[in-house]
Image (tube, rainbow over all chains, first blue to last red; front, side, top):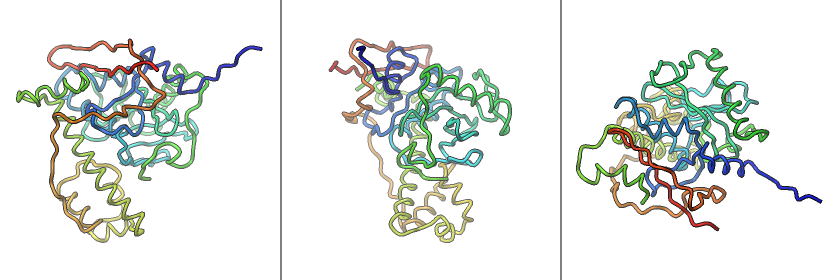
Length: 189
Length: 143
């Protein structure tokens, strides 16, 4: 009888890190607590590690890095599960909720950015790509997302699902009805 | 200390002008830390005493929806906002203190057990122009 090998999504994540398609986001300061896990694509890694085309963009991307590290270091995170109602929340689930596509909303300073991804398990976010929210950014391959239900939003959600499938095949992201299914230490917006 | 942290701290340690990107990173950290602190105080008060956003709004003369927006993200909190929130939430005021950036001791835990970077899997450094980004990896011995 053959030996069955059970692969979990953790094994897949580890394999993607080993083959350098994904990386573990580590805080710059090794003294920072590591409470949650963020695994980033090469797209996100390039964004936050540079090099950057100019100082203004370098400043913006370094701020984003600090915001992503806030997830890792266990900060209280404002979360919204209802599409279109995230407003000022750090993390928002996008429409349709059952697609389980989320964005990390780095609204300040301008230009606002969105980091798209999905949860592999509780407190483990896979950050797949980023997009400018409203202002065109010369260093982005993507157009700003624009108004809700724009083609850019639909494309971003589709791309997130496609990128997930490329990395994790048939494994599904986390699905739930309350924030604690996804992330510890949240503030419901 | 990882090469990345060493690189990040190089100008801070040497006394040279600190690159704007690093200043921006530290500014965002400061903003996030203050926000995290105040949000924790609010959640603690909410949990222990049933203190609500409406209560806070009433105490500091803001509309409840404004409180929701303020608490939802650090945004551009001013020192006035910080002061109002602290006194409104817990009758306290900010007491400034700071900690050195240099020579902080690294923590033992750097990530979940199931993500282990095996020895012999180096990450090559990326150095370009005046904005260099060294990626350092702490290699763990194999099990």
